[in-house]
Amino acid sequence: MRESGMKNSKKYVRRVCHYYVDESGDGVLFNKRGRLLLNNPACRQYFMLGLIEITCPEKLNKGLDELRAKLIHDPYFRNIPSMQREARKTALFFHAKDDLPEVRREVFKLLLQHELRFFAAVKSMWSVYQYVSNRNLTDSSYRYHPNELYDLTVRRLFKPLLHKKDRYIIHFARRGNTPRSKSLLGQLNKAKSRFCEQHGLESDSVIDIFMQHSYEEGGLQAVDYFLWALQRMYEAREDRYLNYIWDKVSLVVDIDDTRERQYGVYYTKKKPLILAALPPKGPRI
Image (cartoon, rainbow, N blue to C red; front, side, top):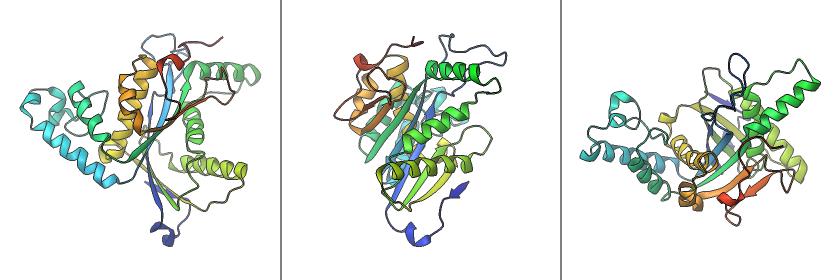
């Protein structure tokens, strides 16, 4: 499904930017009985939204397809369940959580060979819970929904990334069965407008949205891998994956790490994200 912010075909042949967007974590705070899930050690403590800008999506798609075909026919993986087509996992598309460590290694090596840039926004679920609790104290009618968190991170992540090119083609990994393309387009336009207003800029860039499954686009598989590495850094405090791909990371925004600045911390190539920089996990008193 596609929604366009402007239908000007003359713009489409000019400067075009391809973004691929996925999330890590579901943003859910409570179970069906209203009990907080964060006390469960298995529950994700962070919600992350990531995007990859890819210079040549067709080249990446071809590379991933060729790698997958090579691995499927490798006798080393012959009897591995996830490599069988009927399992609808690695044999269909790459997904870091489901792929074997040997497969992940090959995918990461391939991604490093392509022209791409990774951006991400990180939210602490404990900070989200504190916000929801405080909001309920002043507004008894307020009810939290994970879409609220998703939209917030969309605005924060995309705010400085939608004004330089003529057209932005944005592929969102499909979430659930409820179509949200119009809502997301509104969030993107809001983010762009706020940035241009704050910096005295003008932009008539076109924004096109596609809602797709990961198996349909190599870019979505790529951003899944980068998010997995970032998730391992925050949740498991394991840095070797993110360190390996850091050359392709342009920006990671830790929105809720306000120990030094109220707007959070920005990690870049000049200021890499390291384990010692991370705040402690859990509630922040």
